[in-house]
Image 1 (cartoon, one colour):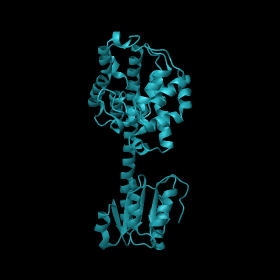
Image 2 (image 1 turned 45 degrees about the vertical axis):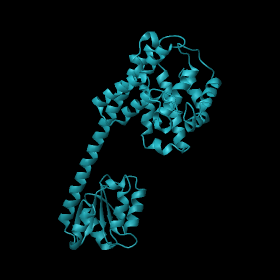
Image 3 (image 1 turned 90 degrees about the vertical axis):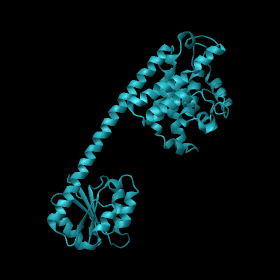
Image 4 (image 1 turned 180 degrees about the vertical axis):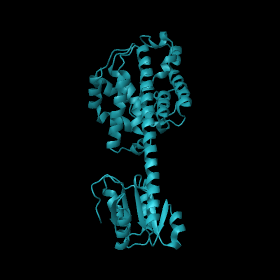
Length: 356
């Protein structure tokens, strides 16, 4: 396999078992591109797997020993990064339609016509550059919008905290609790890890910011009441979950109905007071019918409420809080998540102390 030279030219990978074909193509393209060659599909894949910078385009012969072009192309299509590299098949006249049907962006017929080779490679490289630039612009805009949304939601969460006579750190602490729990679930590969991975876990802990947004609809005489609620007051207090859900669903209409970020915000706001045994509110659902994000949020929220002073209670010791969480395993809390929290309880204690 020929190695690429150290220059700034776009890289073209030529995969062909005939040495003369590789030499001809390299001679045609060498002034405009860095040429890397491989003698069969397996060699081509080996190069791609090890390359620090992927080629802009691949010229791929079809009939080769060890691994032919179709099989190499098929493997590339199953790989997230490699499937985005445009492939031009090197074909004979009678296999052009078959090459395009397989998914190639273009074909080059043998014997090679230098000007045709140059034009077809140049066109596809320009298209790839345009596509890459467009994706970069979209990624930057998405990141900008996400940062704006982060800041807006955090500001709204702070307003709720101050109204609730919180220090301003409750949201931050619960977010870090969720983050620690999520990281442990993934690293330990617990039963729910695959489910978690499919839900953009890095977004879940951010979504914790609005778990109590519905408290904006609760009257001050109830929200700030010291001591135990009367039954009718408790029923009003419980409505903060449905109020929160409604507020976030209005946001979803304005931002994007498909926003996974706001979906997690809604699920957490609506369901973080549900219980694993089905005795929570507002829906009375239980087990895995409760969204995973809300089950994680529930542990984080309760733990923080236990170890900090509230208008209705003094703070509890870390040991007492852990005992309460442990006692709620399988009733109030998901048993798998409870065990995970107990495994990293020292992290929870450190977060509490750091952001007290």
